[in-house]
Length: 127
Image (cartoon, rainbow, N blue to C red; front, top):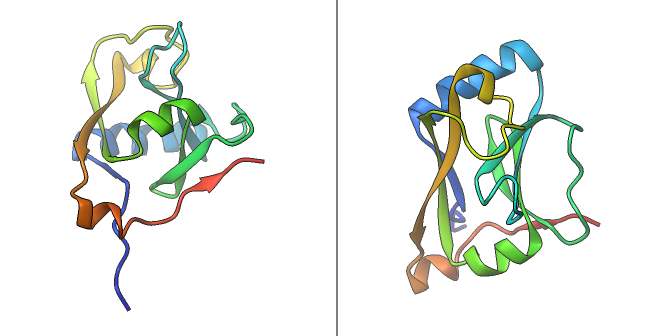
């Protein structure tokens, strides 16, 4: 049985911030939209603090926390691996839970090879 390739990973720096947020808020979720206020930066919420729209894509989990992508943005980035990272500073909007820590989540993208793309983990769609 062949192991499926993940669409999502996180850097150690991002995991450290996530662990800190878990201690304070409990279960989390991530959502990356293509909107005006938040740009295309991933936002972190308490689980249930944001509801994905119909047909948005859940591309994987980080520490068990779902990572959702706006349906239109996913169509653009579906050929890419997402690596969640964090940087110092405030991102646009400031709605994300890491903002009071003076941090901003960001994503690095790497295109999949044709072989990798054929062997990806399935995407869950919201209803």
